[in-house]
Image 1 (cartoon, helix red, strand yellow):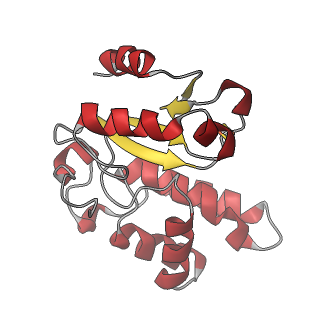
Image 2 (image 1 turned 135 degrees about the vertical axis):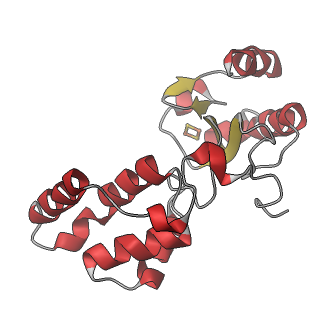
Length: 175
Ligand code: FES
């Protein structure tokens, strides 16, 4: 299913129109500073994309085009980077991001059942955002906490040794 079906309007994501896709003078100075840190300025692309996502809510095609211009890269090149990493959102993300690890240790410890449970509780599939914009659900590669499988990241926090009951308690805290 397309992730567009349940994406809430851009209003809550802080990006009202493509015309707003412009960094402030201070941010442009930071872009130049980051580019100056590397022999090849393009090495600063990832942190600048993070800055763009924090600023505009998500990395839309307009944002990709704007960032590409800052690096004299093609929009297609920037799009490839954005689509490669799960840390970049191409549609408005929820107020909370729940990212369940699906790699080997977590898979063997029941990650699929945890994902199924989250999908049922939230009414979305992986990659989607709830209609109220509360939660975006992701399935991600190993988060290097395999000894606590199955696990997931909720915003900045790791949640270990998941069970459906523990997942329910975690969801109740997310407003
Ligand atoms: S396999 Fe899930 S944290 Fe490593």
